[in-house]
Length: 508
Image (cartoon, rainbow, N blue to C red):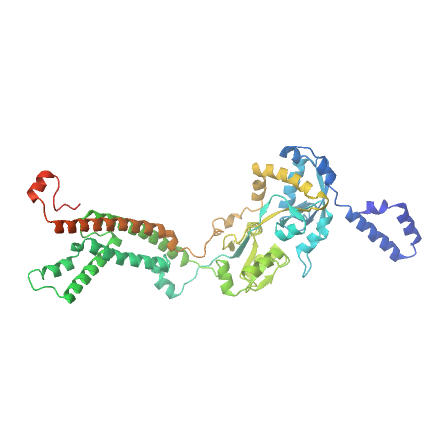
């Protein structure tokens, strides 16, 4: 900056000398020189873009060779910050850009951008000071609003999808009702209703297909064989007992206790299908019940999803100077109070002291904070709430996207060789004492079996039941036709013609 002042045109120098008695005049000239210097930090890249005649990504990656870029960065540790011991810029964003510069054989000078003041956002700084440099080497969220303001972005370098982070669950003593009705938790209500319908349907279906399976019905029927004609109440009672008996046997199938042997093929096929359904459902129920007994009763957390946060009515920590964060909360959780924080370092302490029950941060931000959290008392409690990436950015005026596309060519090569992943892993390694203590970031708020997860099983069972019903109806129609036409040949002749066929065969 001093160099610009010393190299001012001669007319300016003379003006300074003439205005020497006036301090205000000197300050005015200095301010104009500083403004001129700042306006010259961004180059016009159109000529370089037009003169580039390369045809491969490798040639594009070397298009800035020998050049010096004037870039800017926010101090936002651990992504980009000045090391107090060395005075040098460092952090993931900066170290990655250094790797890009080494491979592209170009140099760069970094200017620090001021952080947003109260009631100010990053966008305001980006749309003003950010336009004065060739590129911003601190990641910025790639949003449609910023693109409308003529900013373009590189390939994504960090995953900034929003997630919730809160305290680790602590062992609790759940209320009595949670213990008492625990046996119902593995399945949703709709699944229980479908199972109940299946048992009732099985009892009725078996009674229709093969009513002699019901001992109660057979006993009532035999008592009336040599007496007077069966009255209507007696008939209803007999059928009710028969259905109840088979309903009871349908329940027995849950424990795979088969106390009768069907004789017709359609009944056997149906029972095979129903038994298969029961085996699958029992296995799913057992595994889910184990989960609820071990996980749900041993530990709980106040917030496990965005819905829990909304219903709790408690505050969420968020950086309100980031319009993307505040905009997301306005759209998806307008009733949730917001406790404003200014940087990442304030998130975990605010959760611990009760200022907020959870924090809404980017995925990469949470990962780096967890890596330096020696207390191991935080965890993510929801999956990714949206899809957003952080990337380098540049103003598109004066062909400003050209150096960014050159950087993209190198980033793509580094992505293919996993250099970016290797560098990122150095920033998110968990403390040794935290390994195994943090929950998966994809934890679900509700792990109960839903009807859509077992719908295919019941549809297949109904299809098999339809085949069995068709077989039963076909057999009944044949018997009806035989009664109408009368026996055309004697049983002995029938056996003579078809010696292998038994009139009482189960395949009739």
